[in-house]
Amino acid sequence: MKASTKRAMIVAAGMLLLGVILAAAGFFGMGASFRPLETVSFSTREYAPEEPFDAVSIRGGSCDVKLLPSEDGTCRVVCREEDGRPFRVAVEKGVLSIEETNTDKYQLFRFSAESPEITVYLPIRDYERFYAELSTGDLRLQGSLRFDSFSVEGSTGDVTVDGASIGALTVKRSTGSIRLLAATVGSAEVTASSGGVSLRDMTATEGLVLQVTTGDIHLENVTCGSLNAKAGTGDIELKDSVARGEISLRSGTGHLLLADCDAASLRLSTNTGDVSGHLLSDKIYTAKANTGSVSVPSSRTGGECSIETNTGDIRFD
Image (cartoon, rainbow, N blue to C red; front, side, top):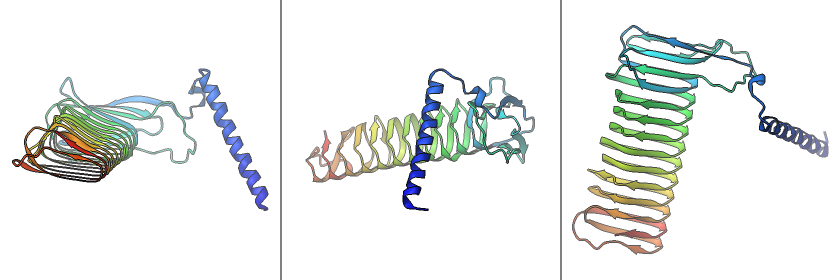
């Protein structure tokens, strides 16, 4: 086939695809419903596990998950399930296990305006472990639930922990925002390839390890044993936050801001970006800016505060 013919076919295919996209946009823009195009339907089913358990495991594939305190002290699992692909809910060896089944493997084209969802109502007490593996979907833990360990893995979706008490928390997501709000943790390790990390009104008795490849890290009113935060491309901002040990902040391309914060010692570095803030106690500053200006207090007492930027200004008062 001649090169000119191939190019013509590629252009024609591209124009056809563009036409389909524009037609669909116009169709739905006029208020048309997705319903006539749906190939699957959903039903809501409720499960009531009666066997005792101390751990929860969810493997949902593609679904949203909510964990909420039970108002009547009993466990209930409410699932919005795709017909023909029900969830499997069972207690096995002391673990409440919830899994998305796939009994219809050979249907190639699946479309629906809805999506699977799992809502777990748990009695308020101490649980040993929570583990979730979700390819795509959001997870929200809300209320005064307590776990010795809490782990979430997956590809795409937001994770929010609001008000819980957790011993060791681990969250790893490829794409999505991670928020820890009004929570109490022993230690936390949070990793996101693309997305922001936000901690607010929380306490960590030990260390916080936060890492994003692309995205910002924000802490407000956080108390912790130590803080190690890294952002490949993004800003790191701390407000009203204190560490008993060391605060270590590092960004490849982004600004570092510490407003009314403190730690026993601090190590702050960025390749391209400004470093600025105000600390609550005196520090002995060591500051270096290869391209930029430096202005820091000249105190001779306190812990060490090391600051370095390649391109940017350093301002502390």
